[in-house]
Every structure is written in C-alpha cells, then in structure tokens.
Length: 288
DNA sequence: GCGACAG
DNA sequence: ATCTTGTCGC
Image (cartoon, rainbow, N blue to C red; front, side, top):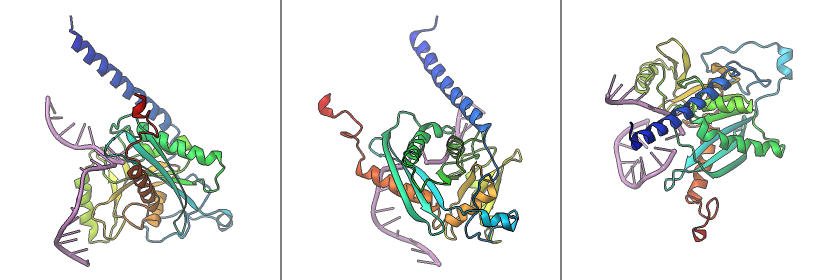
C-alpha cells in the first residue's frame, strides 16, 4: 500500500494537472471563434508606406465612409517586489495619430493564480476585463477600438496567448506584443536575433517567425533604429499580421509601442505607491 | 531524463 | 515580472 506522502503527492499532482487540462479546454474552446484576418470597420490613419507588405486596395467611395482608427488601448500588469502576489493592472487609451493619452485607469489587487508559461491569461485577463467593464458601464467615449497587449497572441504553444484570449472575450481587435520569445515550434530567441542581425545590412527591420512546421507565428521586429533587441508581434484577434505590423510601427516611439509603454509606466507608478496593500485589500494586522 | 518556458 | 548604477556610445 502506498504511504501517505505518496498519496498526497499523487493528489496534488492530480489536481494540478486537471487544472491545466481545464485551462487547455478553455483555450481550445475560445480558439474556435478566433479571427485571424482583418475584421473591423475603421481604416488606418496616416498609412506609412514603409511596410514591405501590401495593403488591399479599397473602393474609393467605401473608403470615404470609413472612420479612422482613433482610440487604441494598451494593457499591462506590474507586480510588487515585496509581495509578488500584489499586482497592478492598467489600461490606457491613446488617441491616434497624436498618441495623446485620453484615458487611464488601474486596478490594484492580490492575485491567487500563479504564473504558468502558456497560461498567462488565467492570471492577467481578469484585470483587463474588469477595467474595460468600468469603461463600458460609464459609456466612456474613449472605449478602445483595438487592444495592444503586453503578451503574445497566436505566438503560443497552442496558438492562443493572452492577446487572443482578451480579444475573443472582449470581441475587440487585438495585437500581441512579446518582449521575449516564447519558444514554440523550434523557434529560439538567439536564432531569431541572429537572423535579424544578418538582415540588418539589407535594411530589413523584421523577420518572419516561421517554425519547423512551416507555420507563421508572427514577426520579430526591430521597432526602433537603435533597438538591439526586437519585439515579437503576433495576431491577437480580428487583425491580420500585416495590419498588426503597421499599427505597431505607427505607435512605436520607443521599442515598446506607446499604448503598452504608457500602461507599463502607470501600473509601475501605482505599485510603487502601494507596494504593500495592508489597509487597502488586506485585513489590518490589528484585526488578527 | 534534461532543458526551455510570454509575464 | 523583479533584483539594480554606472557607464559605453551615438
């Protein structure tokens, strides 16, 4: 007969794996309604013709009726160094083409879900859903037309990263931005960086992320002339990769696109102000 | 078995 | 994610 510690270990193992399998089922289920093409009613402002990719010609009359993409949302989460379970999620909205911040909000909470590679959405998605819900309730005029997310889209072990998750749940077009490569389909960060360097002389600023299987997962791109390290762009929801690249280019003042960078700055700032939530989220120590 | 593994 | 100052270079 197995001893107690073996049974405990087995029980723990069982609950953990079933948890992940539930998560996988959710990802696979949501993935069924994922849209990997342009599916929006606006057009892009100031189309920069620097892209090597083609834009589909549109009938002139139809083009006149289209409103431009104006409000772009950015989402990011920061954590307390003293208590890693304390998180600040922030949502900002920038107005194109000037990229002025027209809206920002944040949510300071304690997270009980740990980070597991491949399941980032189950940890961070609730924060954004809450922040967007606030905007909706107040019928805020700056409700974003598109989301830029600090995390991958289809560049993910099961082709359904945080940006896809958020795009599908909010039904908003979304773009995933990774600052590091999540190794998938034989792709490695060092290998990709080598390719970028090789193309540097030819003026190419991005390389297609094609895995061993032949699938295109996104692109690695040098978003600034002076950035040595690329960012990894992938489809979130309702945007083609070409469109995602164009939007990233038009919002990159620095390495990280402005909507995400601003969200990062704001969440960091609030974490810094309240690294310890005693008296805010916690029962005060005097209540112990 | 070992290493890799978005934030 | 976070730990961390100065410093090498355009």
